[in-house]
Image 1 (spheres, rainbow, N blue to C red):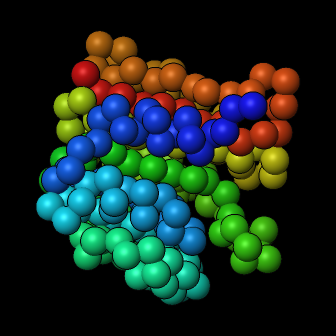
Image 2 (image 1 turned 180 degrees about the vertical axis):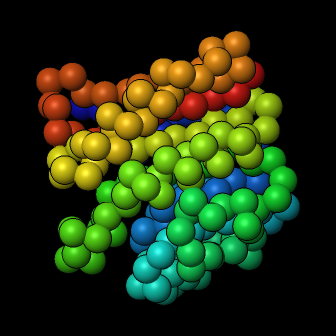
Image 3 (image 1 turned 90 degrees about the horizontal axis):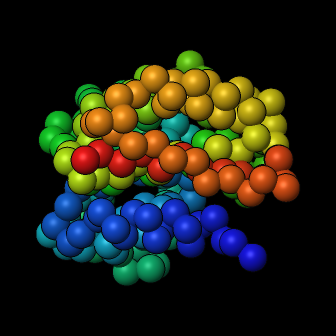
Length: 184
């Protein structure tokens, strides 16, 4: 069976190299932050965002226990404010929309109102030959809305500059899926 997390990493590794800059737009428990940190290595930089203090604590512990290089900045702010913190181009970005896993608070989710400007800002920050992964969780109402909103937005982007693909398990409509945004 297809493992969506493995697929995301496969696509990111086609673009992200040691020394690059990456952003985890939805830090959660730090799994993507750790993956990005280890991939860019000590010469690279990773910025990770979350609005929940619990996510920052959990991620910091996870990164320290896993021996991540000291190349990360954990930011207690909304992902839609990325340009307040990240100035230069990025080679990779990851979004895992939805709620903080294992938090027990499934009603506190990412929202269309902040996801859309965050994704737009992320695309503006992408370097040439860069990638943005956006995982959508349609199993809850806001996740379904976010997915529809993003599909509509991505369909308007200029194909000569940006290629957007979608990876989805067709016979499981409430399973997570992801958009792959690549620059030329």
